[in-house]
Image (tube, rainbow, N blue to C red):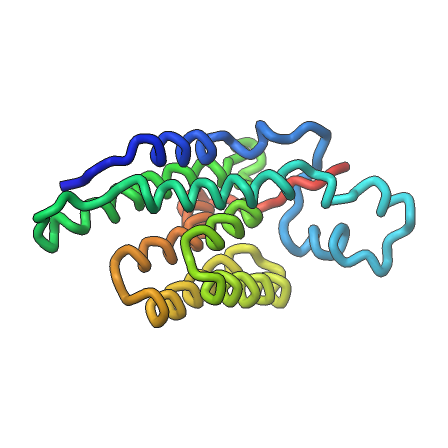
Length: 208
């Protein structure tokens, strides 16, 4: 049996079911991680004119998505609770309900660009989500190691998957090896899994 806190559920879905491309207010280019790193983040060989044109930190998603991810994570973990007197199996139903809501949100955030066979990489959104659902040590460790992995192999999916493993391992040690923690950790890798199921490439919108 599941008790639903409708206020938290509505807030979580309201913040999470807005497609990220709806929040863009400028013309953008879509880049895979290797191109993003060489053309935007690592600027050693770029001229001043190109730097001015691609100020990635001015993109609204950079500032809005971490807040949205945090609100979604904090809301969805409070949206479903087991009913008093539930047996073990019934007590897992809130976790399953949260997993379904979380998957729906991350599927929306990993918005697909059908013609280009690309999906948006919601890295900033997942960053905020992790800070909401894990302890600072777990979230910080997973984010740092996941980001380092993405940089070292120039690949978003690898970063998401490694961050999931770190979050699951540290989260299990510090928060308990429970189905709830496992679902939260799998949510970290959901963009990579969704991208794989679609057969697309993960990209990031960057200001032109």
